[in-house]
Image (cartoon, rainbow, N blue to C red; front, side, top):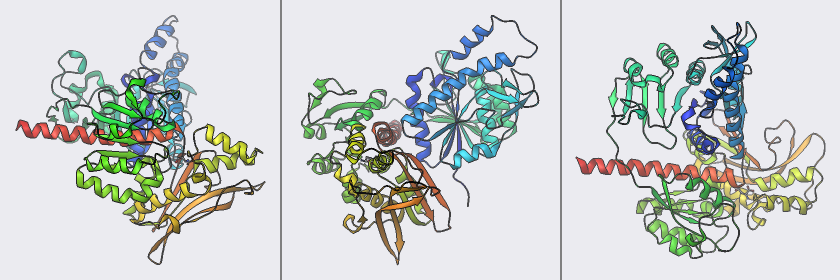
Length: 570
Ligand code: HSE
């Protein structure tokens, strides 16, 4: 069976002008993971860093062996790759930093303008197979013969990306601050028309310095097609064998109008992401239970209301429902869908019990009902379940509740049950009523949602056998670990599911799921297994998933608007 596809995503200096841009790049990586890709992220240095390092090195004369200068300049990419890793970890996405030496990215030729010649492909594959995003500092290599660091020439991160893509048999995408390649380049005042496609021959002139010429030559020689795009954009330029085609200009599109219900742990994270993209999203208002409650990320108090109905009946396009247990939630969602609005929720109970009906209602009225964040935080589990459905899933099993897993870890370390539960609540992992976590109900909702996505049906929640976590739950010592494992499988044509306490040997893949992490393993009819891991609860992992839903709706909105204007114009 073929492996999931791999994508090498190069994050250019223009989209890495400072740490503030890292969340956007995390969204881009997450989007590719949701689409089923294994991602290798190649980082350029933060804007201006290389220039300042060159200037510092210029105080010293050129040496016979320029390896110190190479090492000095390479610190820029190492720093940005490390920062990207931290940003991925915060969002709950597993990542591994891979320096050129660690992945055997060897070069030959001049120290400051070397050519890549070899890669330890297995070292990269091993981390991708473990479900990690592989983060590679671009621009630098390693000269094994002389045992010294090298650089791939100015703009060499492009070459790192193209070379990795070629050796891994991967797709290659270069993220820049423009929607692709334009006739005259964005700095010329009038950039002219953009290209949807560029042939290899035309790309040489059209790209100019936008892509390192050496990287472009390498891509052309080895037939590695390149896509040039912008974070959050819907247009791109594809450079490859196909003939050049100019792009029909897309007129500006108004932002998607968002109404937010709830500004708790997750709501504040989503609010923070939204406000960083005023060109894409406009917040029409947010409903909260308590106006006076102190919040880290929140709009001006004058834009808050306690009347959720006011938000739902406003002229917004999307309602993001993130309340914790508002008794009116279902009526609010239903009303929004009937008005043709789209609804995003992270509420598992609502999604599991009413999701199918809401999707039908949304389809009838022209909106969407989406609930990716209902299952497993930063793990795109529902998207994978849907994708694997066509290949006949035999069973799904996983650790799907962060709170209980976190508590088990604290109990192992000697905390009391009350202390462990309190810590889970303080960290924002537990539900408003932690009874849903402890009773297995939360995990039951999640396995039901996964079953629905993978098998097209799920057992009723009451038919899912559940074990409870309580102060009397025993935690074994030694080589065994207790995990609450959710499982769904097909037997005699019917879907069954359970959430049970299992004592696992330390070697079991679910035994090493720690703290609030979640993991899901899909077993297919052909015997292959597909495992995914990451943080399953908490502000940033859950906000990442909600925001991915929002970005998806925004792209659909941009395409629809562009299509409508094109129709009008013709
Ligand atoms: N309470 C849930 C958990 C939050 O602990 O997994 C994420 O769904």
